[in-house]
Length: 286
Ligand SMILES: Cc1cc2nc3c(=O)[nH]c(=O)nc-3n(C[C@H](O)[C@H](O)[C@H](O)COP(=O)(O)OP(=O)(O)OC[C@H]3O[C@@H](n4cnc5c(N)ncnc54)[C@H](O)[C@@H]3O)c2cc1C
Image: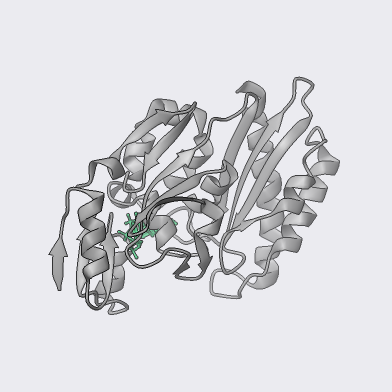
């Protein structure tokens, strides 16, 4: 196995495109190295992207933020302004693993590992995050909800790297939240994850919403009917009831040791209600 640590995206892409056999990007390695140690993967080439400056930066852009794909969860948590503006995104990224994992794991890796249960993905989807993807054909922007197409399957082509995520400027009175349910208190994979971002007008009526569910379908879902249940309401009990029903209706879950299909469907509705209540509180004070 060959290991390369290029200092530029161009070099990384040349390496990936020219590779014979299986070539893999390495960010934090908290998925990739586990898969190599358990013989799920045996790459011929590893391209370590942690030394590429553009992928390690958090910067303000157009009133929002651009976050390098290899920025770690620990670095996100230390960015006070990002945390204040997008608490749901930072909280979701900080649910990943332990303190040790936080020092390595990135949102680019969380997305590109292709797990339907990846915690940061629904949180990115609801704030309208756009993945900036660089490859042999140049640079293109993809809404985060369109990157993962199924378990371990991405819409990226050979040689493409997710370079960064653009989190567009949030309108006033907008709040985001992410909640997940796991059988333990930490260090487990989501049975269900739910992200919600919503905007209120001056009278407290919801004017826009996005709802995303993780771990209940082959890929994280953007659930338009669940958002529609909130828009035009004061996010009151009747709206939460409709949100709960719409979230449950969107689920196509599997049965596994963490939960049955029926359990996941029920938890999706409960988490959607709770995430909406947090998002609305945040929107009121934003
Ligand atoms: C103990 C433990 C606990 C964990 N807990 C959680 C949890 O609670 N929630 C959760 O969601 N996950 C969890 N994970 C999984 C993992 O930590 C996350 O998915 C993490 O975000 C992966 O990021 P990474 O930078 O380490 O990715 P890597 O392992 O470096 O890469 C993962 C995959 O993505 C590809 N890749 C990485 N970056 C890019 C890029 N920029 N462009 C293109 N492809 C790329 C790699 O080639 C690889 O296939 C856990 C893992 C461990 C070991």
